[in-house]
Length: 163
Length: 261
Image (cartoon, rainbow over all chains, first blue to last red; front, top):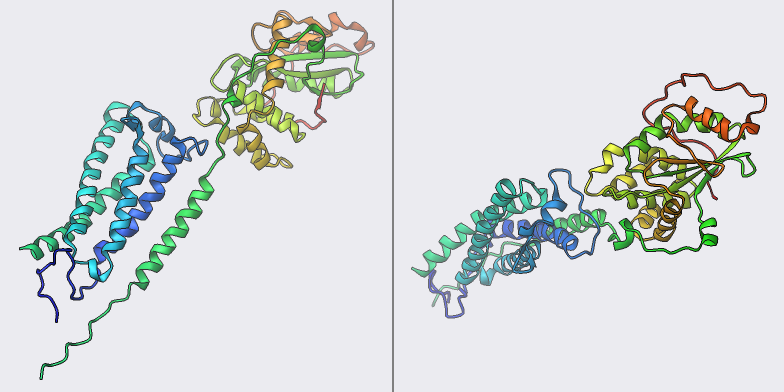
């Protein structure tokens, strides 16, 4: 017997089948691209690689600016952590038993939302404080914005399921 | 009798995993092509050296021409110094053509890094090319394209691009060398030799051990100075024309063996 829609158990798992939402699959793909983007910058920042290939902007100067670290942690490393978390959540979230899991939808939206706000701050810093651009930061800002927008349907579904 | 529940529809995740796998492979591939070895700290900075007069005598420059030539010309230069680039473009090719290739002179290049952003790194880049017998080709590139790399935040990448255009130069080995601290000691010693000889700016020239002052503005001026210092080397040879022919702004690659002096 199937559980009625909206009757999410204490584990937050609905037992009836729901097809994996395309939006969540797209989030996984975008998060994976974000992982590579942030990993490249992190490897530079941590001294694993010697230089950045930068066709647009001044990537190395941006990466060496005072605003490229938060509380001593490179911003790119924070970004890498966020994308890895989003990728993991999206991969779990496409599994049939977690498709309607409210907590996954909320976690994705929350991480992506914080990411959008932080990216907006970094874009402002690039445009108005250091007057330099880094193509990888711009790519990341676009990715996190898309992920946030794609997370909204999942959030709506979770709210509908809860009500 | 309850009706049996319909078999649940199962939408396959396979296409999603295939796309994710392709993105994963593409990402790994792209990242692999962008990986550059870390540049060592000593790549762009000298090391303190204290050489005895005897050791200074043995400091090696990069030499062109006959070892037994009657004239020995030393040039102390910095690849990032604009005056050196002018000298390399307008006078040095004529020195090679008229003095080195005719067997009258041996030309020895010594690095004297002045302290521009990439002075030391470019000096080492020259040595790295020399390790593969391509010093003079790289010398031409570095001086001829000085404006291109001088303000580049990643001059090494530019040097590697130049290396790719030089036939017979293994760009991979060259990059490995430039990003390491190889030849840090040699370039530092070359700088110390210059200091011990009273070099204060670049380019500074010595002919048979005598400092050439003032720095010549044309080849004919230089040849006149050389004739004064070593008149025997020009026995029977006519003097250079007063106006030396102009050459292009990019010093061409010069064929000839580069050897450590």
